[in-house]
Image (cartoon, rainbow, N blue to C red; front, side):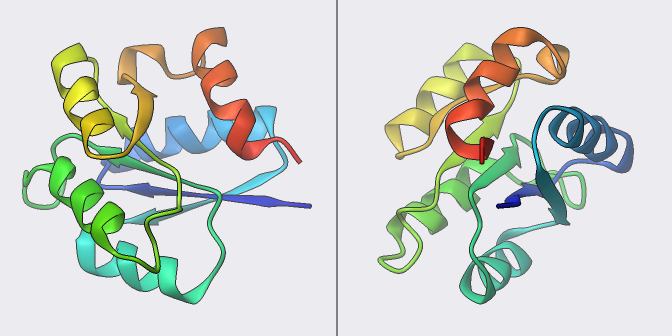
Length: 124
């Protein structure tokens, strides 16, 4: 069964790096969203196995933590796993406090530790 990852708020090159990492290790589709509205709309329309959210959204540099809060406070969506994409531990901890799973940083894209973090959500 093909899994689905939604990547929110990353620029084109970072989205492509995440997509390459995911599709080379998992049978998964990677979709891109840009903010809270299109992410929530997509989550309401289809089953998603994991959402990754950039700490600072590429489109307007708003805080990705706000998207995590929006997803986790919505009774229909709060069971969808979410990870923050940031190299900073304090922001990872803030995301976990809001209900996210500990994520990974852009410097860790493609490394074995990141693949291990993704396995519970993206392994068929």
